[in-house]
Image 1 (cartoon, rainbow, N blue to C red):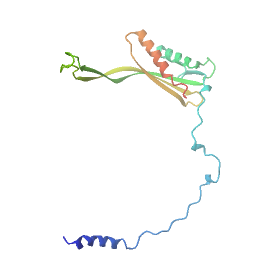
Image 2: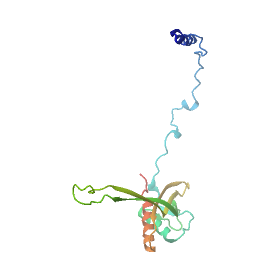
Image 3: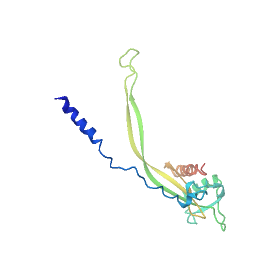
Image 4: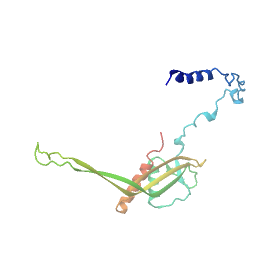
Length: 193
């Protein structure tokens, strides 16, 4: 193939670069500054909200006002008491409304066992040491989950929530103990920070 046939497309591309540029170098004027730019004050939306003072919360009552009774209410009341939160007096307003729920959920668990690798014979025996292999089993268990939410009594905004799960015990005393421990764990993060 002659060389001039290879160079010919190169010259055509170079000639195309010599044509007039369709873009002009003009620009529009800068628009005027917005009205808030003339005020040097702070923009409240540009900063995060002030941290919440959890020390203001000292008393609580249930969200529905009556409670629901039973072991969950007792466990949550005990966990709140451990955090310094006391039930509101009968005719006094509470600082917090408390919501607590208990649900059953399924979790997938795995366990791995290693088989083989036994020591047969003595040193130098080809079976000494051997290879081991893992066997992984997957199974599903049902756990109970305690969810606790705290709401500011004045604004009704949620200010904190926590949850913990526990395995159901074999008898009632094991279940009650596990429920109390789960309620305590759910409240471990209160107050945050």
